[in-house]
Length: 151
Image (cartoon, rainbow, N blue to C red; front, side, top):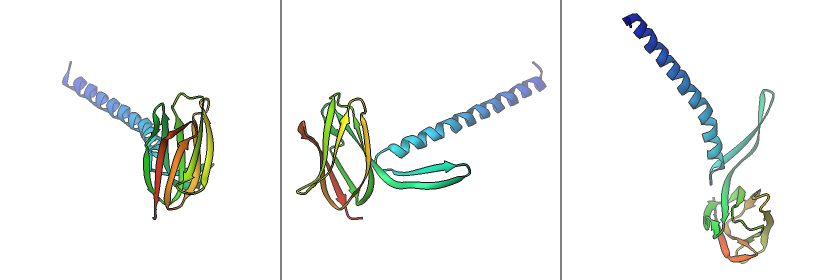
């Protein structure tokens, strides 16, 4: 192989490698950003794109609570007061979960039914400073304690 052909081959190989790397980064970054937006205590900004304009729909944090066959994960959450997207992922293998969000020594804030067929439930709630408990009516020993602090 001549020296000139060897240089062309190396240039082509380097160029193709850079293109492949650019494609990997191009396709991997949106997936990383999507996963980060769902993770617990991350700020979630939802944008709606209509032709060339964008409008902000929501800008608040989220908390993910997973129901396992052994209870809630995490069992305790501490966060500042304000609007939060509360997300529940039912991985318990029970047919139906009847959950209650109750202010400790106070009224029931929310009640939700999470069937196995639709294991993901979410709702935006505005929680004021205090202590809250998420429980299941069939498993009262399962608890997720939520402490809301002043900003």
